Image (cartoon, rainbow, N blue to C red; front, side, top):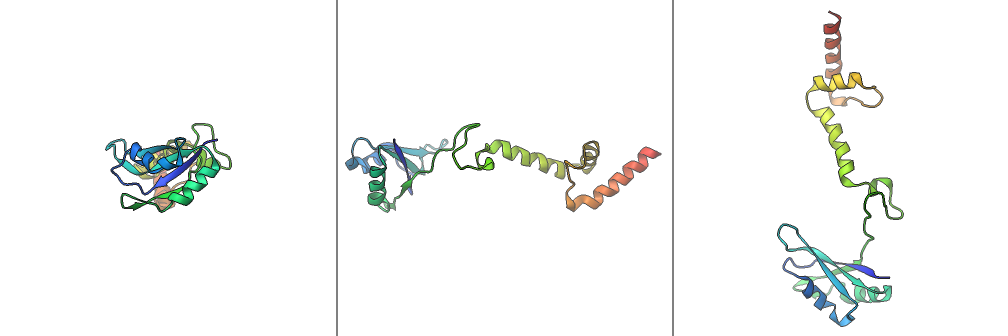
Length: 157
């Protein structure tokens, strides 16, 4: 089963062939990939090397970790397993780790918008929904209470 190795501290001006040439004496079964920036096309400072066995991976880590390449000491270690797509989660991952980032950040934005904007719209939305699900921001609790009293006074008149 192939083993991926993380290769860090790569120079910005680098292509796949140059990284592949570093590991040429390990054999043809070694393949390299340089991770590039989408906008600039330059190396982001890391890449991956794939080898066929754990033994070869261990040899490469021993031999090349700290190896000077274009005035940079390489950092080589076994890569962590890839994050799976929607619904799939790696073994041992918690529910929050496997949740897509967009989904969790969207929930945070929703909470912030209830706190931040117009307080009268916040009070009307909180009065129509159950008080158990949405709690007012403690920094504005006393002002919110005053607004509720004013609103109740206007509706009774």
